[in-house]
Length: 263
Image (cartoon, rainbow, N blue to C red):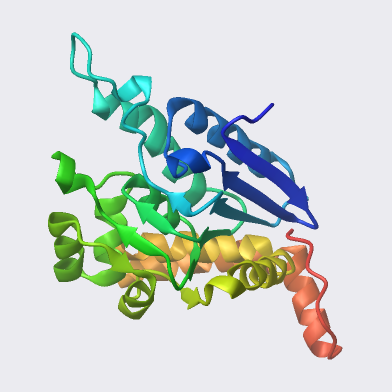
């Protein structure tokens, strides 16, 4: 499809999705969500893609929902924000969580509201030192959505999650990394090169194993130890029959670098 609100490109197994409304700090609209769903469907269908990188154009990663979007506009009747969440944000988060490749968020500036949650929905978050994260919902009488109430307590614990959500204080990237909210913070000038290197590394790894690792880790909080051991056994059985496992063992025995195909 022709994209108007995002940029989408695939090179050397790396899909790059850029939120592209820089004049609006890349805030979400219904039209952008439709394009995001189409891009994720492309990633899911294209077996040559081994990793997805999400970034924002201009000086922000994403400022959350555009309150001027028609879906949010106050008219004779109040907008059904719950429907907006069900139709747009829920499919976005689930699409990322169930994607057949690992995902990386490259946060170059403010990640606020649903924009912060979008970053946290990715497997790895790399942020520029000048970037920040903001749970802005309480300032307009709402709760963190786009999985925010799920991601925050898991990453930073209940006390810090509650403080971030209730007080809507801006969290600098360095503190976000210190708290365990994100994976890594780098100098602003190093952000692009760092993510490029990481994406190339992930694209050369056994894709299916990375995605099963994600699934197992997300399932763990709701499992007993016995249930988790059974899930691990099922995934190990599946992966043990994969070409990438066979290649990994052969490369180890032959003392050479493996050539994984993602299968």
